Length: 92
Image (tube, rainbow, N blue to C red; front, side, top):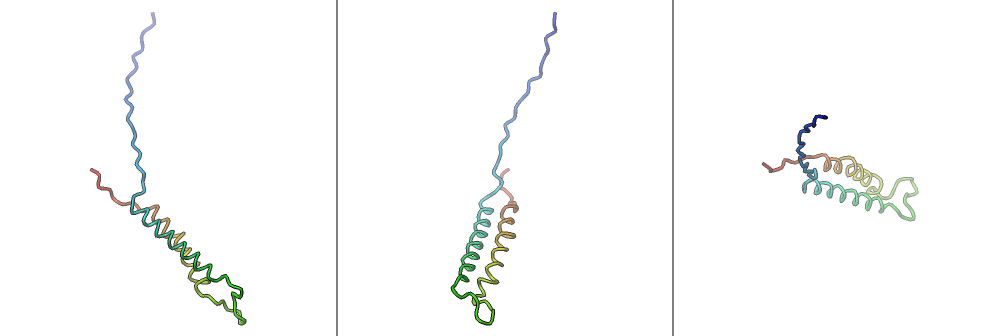
């Protein structure tokens, strides 16, 4: 006769996955998106029929220097900060 094998009961625990981003994270990411949109709008102000004067200088300082700076700040600093920043929770 074959011996009956006794198998231990496996208790399955349910895993609760919680979304890691909180309201503050989305607020920071939203600020980054606003900065990026402002950067693109400022860059669009440089689109004219005559973007440079006869001496070779650009007409619009916002489109040449400030807009790219805003885009770099938005894409490289504010949005990654909003994604990686963790805020403490009040759960006990």
